[in-house]
Length: 100
Length: 240
Image (cartoon, rainbow over all chains, first blue to last red):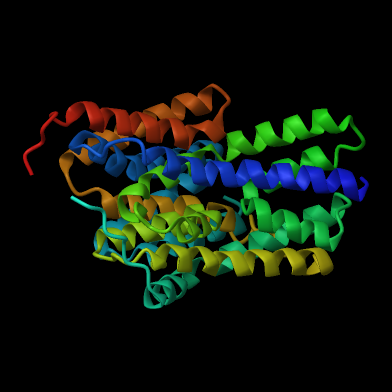
């Protein structure tokens, strides 16, 4: 691929990527933040996270389900989110290592 | 009520930088993986670094690589496919940045959009968590984003230059880190019984999207659905 082509594609990739990151914030400027809108915005992160976990669980198998359960249980018990996340990763790494 | 400019200080930036260090190992390893793939796909080191710098998203960059490495093609066709692919894969960032408006609204555009430039899944979750715990400084978001950006580039560089050093993210189960983090954050955020309903519905919507063969759309659709349900379930004038 020649440099000119790459430069054009790079600029387009940059524009597309930044657009996604900017447009949500920009568009919300014109949306009055009523209690309903605020409730919607507050519910979005937990919904997105549930979506991410669901996809990972569906893409994987029992090993991933056990790992996710380990993470959530650890989190429920301790409230340490980062450590719980790494516990899940460790459980999965071990499961894969033993051929599960 | 006039909107005073939200807090944005160097202490906030430093807090964000520091608190996000826990995510650095995963970001670094995935940066290496991309560097290696870019090298194998025929990209020079500079090209790989530029892609990592401007796209700043592992999933989108990987998809872009398959398109770029597919060989000569009319430029317009490649450009279209590239843009469409990136928009689809990064669609969730539209939602992420929308959720930051209540916090970042009123910030000077230069600060706001610089912060958004380095917005990623990990630092978005971390920032919202910090915000829920009382963090008011928007510098935190920028700091946490920058904290991810550097290892992403360094990882790309090392993966490209020394591919044999790249560990397999799957063997370390690092491919699961983001989902694991999301699971932990989700449990941490679920405080009311209503939240369980929202989670259940989100799981359903995401599973549906997955079943349709649209895994990339699943988090976005789940996010939208959850937002709509919360919107509808809230009385028009909620008692504060």
